[in-house]
Image (cartoon, rainbow, N blue to C red; front, side, top):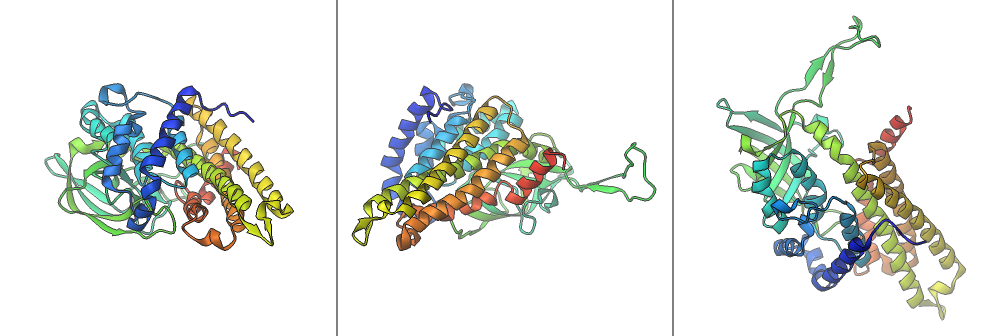
Amino acid sequence: MRRTVFNEDHEAFRETIRAFIAAEVVPVYDEWMQAGQAPRDFYKKLGELGVFGIEVPEEYGGAGETSFKFNAVITEECARAGVSFGGSGVHTALCLPYFLKYATEEQKRRWLPPFVSGDMMTAIAMTEPGTGSDLAGMKTTAKLSEDGTHYVLNGAKTFITGGVLADRVIVCARTAPPTRRPATTPDGLRSAQEAPREDRRGGITLLVVDTTSEGYAVGRKLDKLGLKTSDTAELSFTDVKVTVEDRLGEEGKAFSYLGQNLPQERLGIAVSAYAQAAAAVRFATEYVQEREVFGKSVASFQNTKFVLADCKAEVDAMQAVVDRALDAHDAGELTPADAASAKLFTTERAAVVIDKCLQLHGGYGYMQEYPISRLYADTRVTRIYGGTSEVMRSIIAKSMGL
């Protein structure tokens, strides 16, 4: 079926990205895999190409586009080639929305031009050891100084993608303890039988931390199952001074900010899962046509045909879900439940498709020299980050009134 979600501008951009990947990424990707990260100067190349400025207003050096579909094109083309752009996806898809929506005019003029050029790479630090999806349970603190000029940041974060090479990190920290609010009956009256409830969502603030600050430290670069070219690290903060001019948004409002960006984050993951599954079918189709067993191509066996037919049907369904979600997002109509549904469906089905496509490669599918093995490892985390599949199910069920 003809795909209508992308227009001529998107497709022209696709050709540019495809050519860039072929020239700048594919020839050196094995080196990146061995190093465990893309080189820092690669991000400057992405900046020169205009990748980081697509959604940044023109007055700050960007293109001023509002469509998320350009990001989807990048995701699809990376998956098609069996590569990634390292930790740059966090820079644009996760960090940029916070700068655009919550930064002051002064902050935008200070941060966005180097953001666009790649001179200032960013990451976001939410997850802490032992908290997982429970963001409200974070222990990292930021205490305002007596003269009100700076915060003193203490704590630790983990699983921070882009954390090794980042120049600025958006850190979620508790600037006030959880508040106590009285329990109420359905009619709004205080219940004598119930104890006051704790509101853990308040008192969390976003700070844009300079990674050269004294007391800021990058711990282990984490050795992951997949996504080998994105630098993922543990971070620690010991009495790190962060000026109030580097606070992003209002104090104590971060939890609501994080929730507002989650639909786009989950849409991005859904696009990635779909793109990886589509790439897996492509790789498997090419492989079975070339590989011979018992004097016949693997593609000639009925089982192979049926397996790939099933996978193609699954990918078609994923594409329909993703395309509908992309249109809804650009129209400002993608709800948290919609995004959760798209993420849940695509990530769960992508795992099945990619596993079947790896099986068709036989033993070679287990070798990292084949992109199918990288897809198998890379796609596993899509059911974890951005909210686990279990969390997605809870969101969907709640939207159903359950």
